[in-house]
Image (cartoon, rainbow, N blue to C red; front, side, top):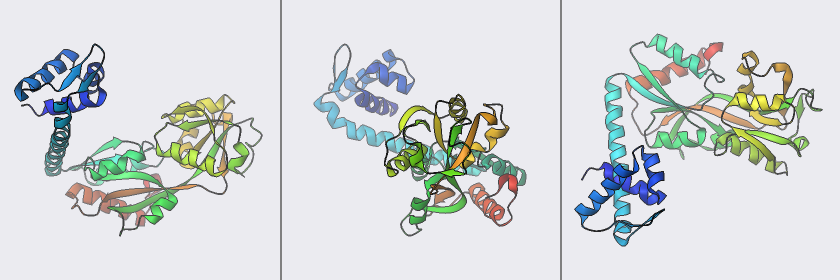
Length: 314
């Protein structure tokens, strides 16, 4: 039996809907239906109860599901391993990074590394910090640039963490306010002063969303979240119209001042006091030998940390 059929079976069992499963698998419904029927014919038992709208597992399907999930997981793991071995031979490594690469000068660091090691290649996957750790643990990435709450990063000592952390920089939370806001001219404000405002946050399920909502709750109020987006320019645009405020990290705002977005005069950044900080770190697994390219990248980053260059410092 084609092992891909087990993945299709597992996805259908999760969604209980042929249309949704086929969309997730990027195949048409008739092909998915044929594959499931082929499985049932080979196994000699029905795997699903079918209705016009939904499907549900039979007792045979329920018995097969954990094995199908295991086969799917194992296939992903060995496929990933083979891809990494081939990449290592070609001088390729994969780096996972928080999406704000330009704001944190990560793109400059990558370009500097590429100039020093033209025979090497760093493939980059942008993802939210909440997913980067699992991507490193499952070896989808060999290295990651990730964000953690400052206290969390400090508590994760080498003894109780699977990661080696190289500190990159620390950032702090700011309020993004419309230019005409009564608090816009202040140097710093407390979060409690923003109670009752309509907030713009970076998208739900992101670490920034969690940091902002937790900070508001710690200030004894539940924020009214009127807008969420994964695009910083959309958040700046919403604030510039004067009806919303936003919570971001200070470094988020740095390159926007030079971008062709909402003019800087339309908004103001004010520090939050007491400071709420996050730590950006370069991480890799402490129990895994790095490929030559990954090792060179880590060494290059440490060297940059010792001899900082403003455009791409560590």
